[in-house]
Length: 464
Length: 100
View 1 (cartoon, rainbow over the protein chains, first blue to last red):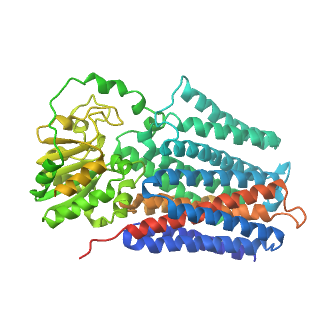
View 2: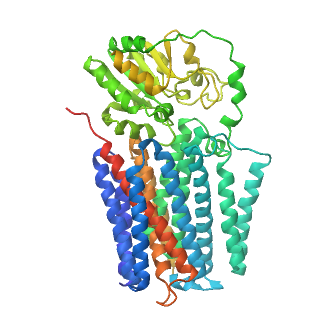
């Protein structure tokens, strides 16, 4: 296949990828969008086979590796529980990163296969592109591995900090840039390997100081990195599909990071440099004087909700941990039978990744037109009888609106306290991830339900 | 003077960032998780580079180190392509409207 023809096909597959993302603007078109994505991928792979047109032993190996990888991927995709989506996505990011590193290494070892010159005399631009691709890919890989371990609970979610941490990261970053410059002058393989190794190290160091609750930002950021790594390789290979995709994925991840940061009212750098979770733990204990709390049980909750005319459910990460989404749906069904109007309110940073709660509710067969974003529903709390907070905490804290001293001041929160009564399911009075006491616990209209989110919800279903 | 082809690729890249910017802002927040998994799947189009790397060279020396890195990259990207698209599909199937 001629180079021009295959370039046109790569353009088509790039366009199909754009349409795949476009489809996600509404759930109705999203499934079609996913098919566009699959078609784009199929075209890219087939065109590559035809343009290399080497159908010997190597081709058979390629097919074997494709089938093995595909089978593993399909197996994971069907088996993974929806609550584990954040770690799955982190794991997938690490694979893209590592694949980018491998392709870059391969291009460095055999530049003639990619028309980039010969060993020891690789074109300058290609050398910069491939070493950037390798460096970003390596950072994505090791960073995603750390994110995966933290999300999976294998590694503690607590931030790991040490002295001069940021200085060391800065020095490592500058070293990588210097080495790339030096690589361009010397073409030495040792320099190339050093870039890869230092980048692996930097990826680990960037992610370890970031706490568990900031994972939505981390995942989005690594998503973005994996895109930039792909784009770097795309420039090396002069491949349009890869350049377009890299740009799409890179900007997509960047926008998601921005939305997540805005949801916490923190700057991107503040999150990356690991603030919060690490520093503010002392603050929670300081205000620990015993304040009266109203304590309720499942029967009280059932009574309140049954007699309400409207109920808003506020789910959070705790719901995912307790796997309470199905019990929750049953509760809502029972309430609806009693003529109660029920809707769901989702805070942008509820859960461990963007859109995490929406997927879990969808899994439990909650229709998506009953689920609302913060801006859509926040005014409705004032007219609502009961707010049922399940597994969320900081995102409901009214302190964010009233106390300029609070670390979460200015963060957009759900106005739960405006509803006539608040049912707060929680295991204890302990503060949330931000380490801040929630004022809501002590309000007159709040009834605390101390229990596991799933057990409590099931009990409420029984007494309904 | 002739324009370096790099400039054309850079133009494609910059324009695609803009397209990405506008397309992603139009994605409904409730689909942000599928957005991440599908971007993950499509970024595995890096498999194109992996295939070229794996098939480079003549028939006898198909197992040189550069080829082996290519094969490994194919394996990783394939996990991602199939895993990413299928898990996205699985998620999207679950989004249903209220029964009227």
